[in-house]
Structures are given as structure tokens and as C-alpha cells.
Length: 248
Image (cartoon, rainbow, N blue to C red; front, side, top):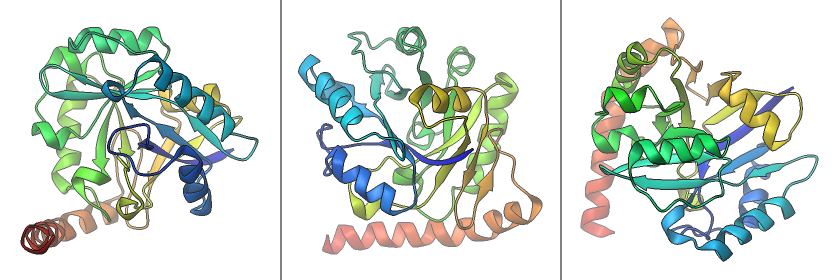
């Protein structure tokens, strides 16, 4: 069955999140979603916090909606890795060690917001991670991903042909929500089935104006729309940021 979900979501368990897990469940379910993958900032949690994450995720999951608990790890040199399905803290910041930890916990290692690092990443890292956010709504903006992101991702796939592209919400508050979903083909709504489908690339990135497969491929028509709208959207985002600077 086709399951609509959101990756890279923060609750109030993260220091900068504003919504509880119960509020996130109501919000996303009200927008037609069937699962969310939480990625709480690991540095904001201790063991008691992790226990709350697991307990509240389970309490807000049922046969119609699944909350998958996970962590976002900060690693050297300034990269963030999503550990989808991972709830065990890890004291090291060495990037390869963090990736190894995520895999040891049977999670997916996803490089978050590559725009933040200028789409620069060592080949040895690209060969080890599972996926990359080709669209991070929080960093890249709503409506469409940057046109350059698909080209950068294609270059990374030449280093690691197994690398998957995903969309992440990086949501911390309601106002930053945009309906950019990962629609997964999974047998059930269980954590295990959803993560397995993501790992195997059985999903599609979908929004009102954008659609891509896990390899970052888009139709010619959507590619043309992306090229045409990329610069106007970039200018609009810059103007909005400047306005917030003046009046925010």
C-alpha cells in the first residue's frame, strides 16, 4: 500500500521544537499523512529524554498513524546526520563512527540539509551514507527544491550509485510546514516495514509542483518548471529574509 509520510521532524523534545509529539500527530494526520519520522537533536537529550521519545512515539502510534522515533547527530566537520529509526545516543562526533553507529542500530543514515555545507562532502562519506536530502524545506524553502540540487545529487550518485534522495521537512513549528511528502510503498504501517521500503528505494517524493524518484529523476516537464521557477523563488526567498531582517 502507498503510505504518505514526512521525514526530519522535530518535536518539543528538541531544544528548538515547538510542538509536542501528540500535537505533531494531530497536525500531520490532519494534512493526510500516515507517518512521521522524528529526528530529535541528539545533543538535547539524555537517557531519560530518549525514553520519553520512545514512549511518546509509541503512545501516538496506532493502526492509522505511525510515529518513528529517531535522532539527528552533529558530527565533524560540521555535518548533521539523521539516524532514521535510531534512538540510542552516541558520544562520538567522528563522522564515519556516527554512520557506523546508525547502521549498527539498523537505522538509515541520511545527510541533512547539504545546502548548509555547500554540497561539499568527501567521497569516503558519500560511499557510506544511505541517503541525502535533495530538498530540505527548512533550508531550501517551500514549493520547489533548488534546481542546482538535482545536478549536485547526480554528481554524488556517480560516486555512490546506491545513494538515495529524499525530501525532509526539518519542521520545528507549524508555520514552516509545506506538503512535501515521501510516499512509501510498504506492506504495513509498521516502523520496520516503512524503514525497509525507504532503504530499498520503494518510494516517491511528491508535492504539488514537484515529483522525483529516489534517484532524483524528474519528468522533462517538471524539470523545465524547476529551471524556470528556481531564480524567481530564490529572489523571493532573499527578499523575505531581508524583510525579516528589517522588521522581524
